[in-house]
Image (cartoon, rainbow, N blue to C red):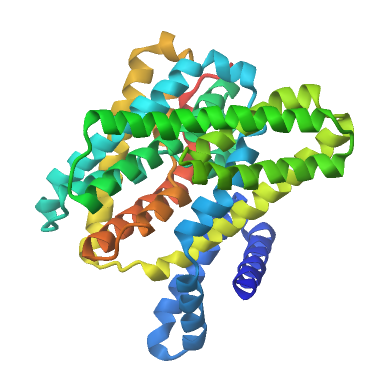
Length: 412
């Protein structure tokens, strides 16, 4: 594990340097692009015998990393906390209904729309994927990734209220998506569809329990921070709350992602205002911003390296184009259309529906969930489709979201 961690950090630092020095893309996109280019170059050069040992080493390295476990049980807690730490809770309350609707209803309806769309469309390409796997793909691809969204939104310079809604949606909908994914995965394993009561119970236990646990953990952390005035100890307390709290949430079978978002909101608002000195605020912000940047860069490098685990043929490439189309159409129908038709409900600048549709970026969480499926041909197809949608989302949507924002939204 030490060797894996060292190689990942060294590779990330080198690629991030090359991006900043010569390319100038946003760090997340630039490091993933460099990692992806390096992996593809090794694949192309293999027949000639050049760098064969390097490719074999990279393949062994990637296979030794449990991507799903590293992200879902390691990085995710810290990335979600860091993202929520700088969200203004007072402003978020103003947009609580649009955010709740997008996170809960939007994710659920998108799962059904994408899943059924792929089930109907894939046979036209000669590919046959069982309905349950199509729905699993819908569940894992529907949540917008807060890691990708919040990192790229900073450079898009969207109006603050629009950025708040997109960020709020992305922070909460991954927890809902994971619950839906778990329901469908349980159905796949048992072969029995859960009843409505069972599904509602799981949603309440995971989602509601995660929020309640986050409130309790956030309050305890707030009291601890308020009782001392030592920035080193206070930073350590927040790190302990995030890592220990996420582990405890998994033991209690409640949603760790939702819990970490709630803790981040509490510490970033009440904690920052009432329990910290100016010195502590400065050190806390610097620590979590730096940790967020490092983990983001490592994650996107790992996603670039993960291309070695994906098998792409002509059929998969065409199916990926179909998946991108279906996913974008579902996003436009379920998120963009209501935002355009109900402007008073969303209370956003004119033209925001275009940014809401195009800004629904997918990232590492989708890849991690796809890789957690049981081994088999169906899993390989879902992984290829997921990876294709994520790459399109990050490179095409991520690089053009600033342009779409400038052209679509009236500045306020």
